[in-house]
Length: 301
Image 1: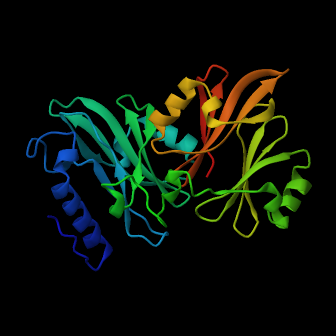
Image 2: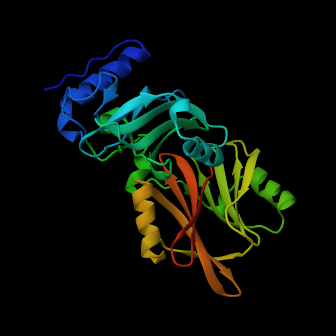
Image 3: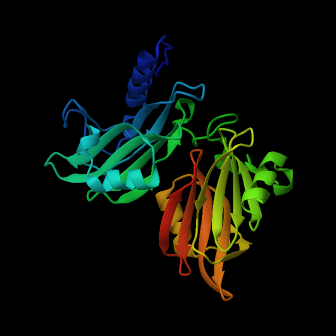
């Protein structure tokens, strides 16, 4: 049986967690057998990341890989330009944390992993060998590594669908509703959410779909467009989305939490769908065309 020992100091704590997890969970690795890769590489499916502002010492990002492959640490400059371009476009202002190349003993590259902080929240992303986005990697707290990745009071407790972060539009603070009325008077307020960091997100429509973010005290932070200038006229259920759109969400955003979906119409003809999801406390907007084909992904907050 593996015993967890509490150490003083962040570095020692992380090291203790990593060693304990690798020794307890060798059967969970999909990589090479022990000793078959360089000492600087890893066949553990877990990547430890420091969390600096949530009151917890670490989280683990889950990244299994195919048999025969292992993960080598690289610096930021070792990532392909396509990966860096994706990060700069979709996570503007991100802070680089870690990066890895996935390869086999013959040196064949199978993909890349980038670990970043975006608005103070960790995000792990997997890219293919050409640097194309594949998925946002699942996160877990240390106590949930062998469970379902959530527990009462934990960072990812909303994964069970019972911890709703939506709030009634009618219950929005007057500072927010007054700002929206004064600055975006034609907007129809559709949905609102209180995020894990207590910021408030308002989804609204005015010949297009918008996300407007406010601080916990009701101060404006930013506004982004989520869709083209078409009517966002109907909220739909998750299971009303095209099947290929649902498959994409499941494959690219493991353990995502569905927030809302709206159909986009032009002259009463459906042009597409915008889906708002929460992934490890980061909000995304995913835009599909009428057939369920991906058009764009936007990171909201």
